[in-house]
Amino acid sequence: MKKVQGNDSFQRINYLYQISKLIVKTHPALSSYYGNLMVNVAKKNVLKMHPDIKRQICKKCRCTLILGQTATMKIKHKQKHKTVEWTCNTCNSKKCFLANGKKEPLWLERPEAVVEVINLD
Ligand SMILES: [Zn+2]
Image (cartoon, rainbow, N blue to C red):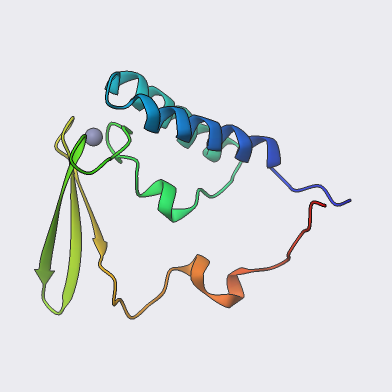
């Protein structure tokens, strides 16, 4: 069986992500700490976090962003594009993403992003 590179670290990131999301309502500072750990684990092991997970972490305080609890969301029209703007309630920093209907898919959504499929059975 082929070993997946960075498998332990992916599991650790997954665990930290779940904890961070679970406790953000009661302990936002602890959530930021776990978010920070997640980013550091990914950086140290040169791994890429999935964009869906990465987008849920505030880029400044690294708190988990949950709509209506720790973040507010606005849809804006910038020139021809619709963008979604997330504002962190803890540190007031903003994140912008292109809304659906975008022309360019994310790199991970493209077929050429899949190099190899490894079955763990
Ligand atoms: Zn923040």
